[in-house]
Length: 254
Image 1: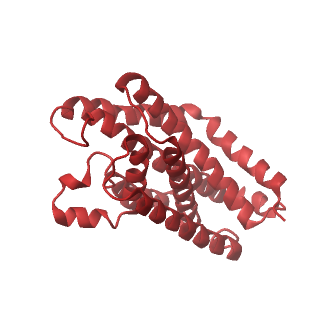
Image 2: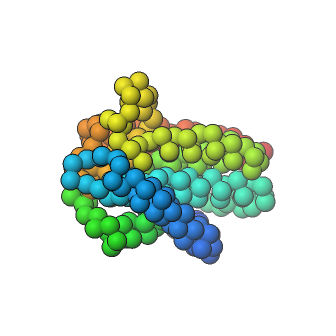
Image 3: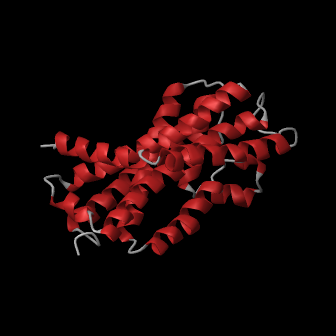
């Protein structure tokens, strides 16, 4: 049976971990992401044509919100796990009466909370200052939660396979950052040459950004159902890999 008490204890512990340094884990990402909006939005507002009836700033905000959700969900699980491994306190979690599935769900749920909290801060400012509206909140919530869950799982995978902070930094700088910036956050892929449009379709982050943006404008570069399918497949795939590694104790029980 699912150990709900153990799950909640670990989940609350993980939320308190990032909440205790909220200036660094929540407010700083909000401010740094808003700088992109101020710079790109003000400079390129009249120069880039996006979806009909939208300013570039309005088009940009959902992409920035999703970028913040992805990066912070990844950072939450990856940083927590690598710190626990390096400091040796992961042993106490593994000795507790909690299964690998419950451990995984607690870490991912906390990463969803952090990612959505950062994204919500950016979204509120976008609604107030840039007259941003939304067409379908259910799509917005669905893609925000699924994308944060996928990135939380990917962060846990990076934390498991990394043996030191340098390995985690390489994972973030050479995989997560490029895929995030090349996911259509700052542009519609229809403005790219055909070869780069085709390359973008192999980037799973593109489908998360595009589906999330659909919830605001009911316009997207590909079908929202395709985006939902790709995102769901990656959530299941990443979760399965993590659960296999956790059950075998790969690089966490040595």
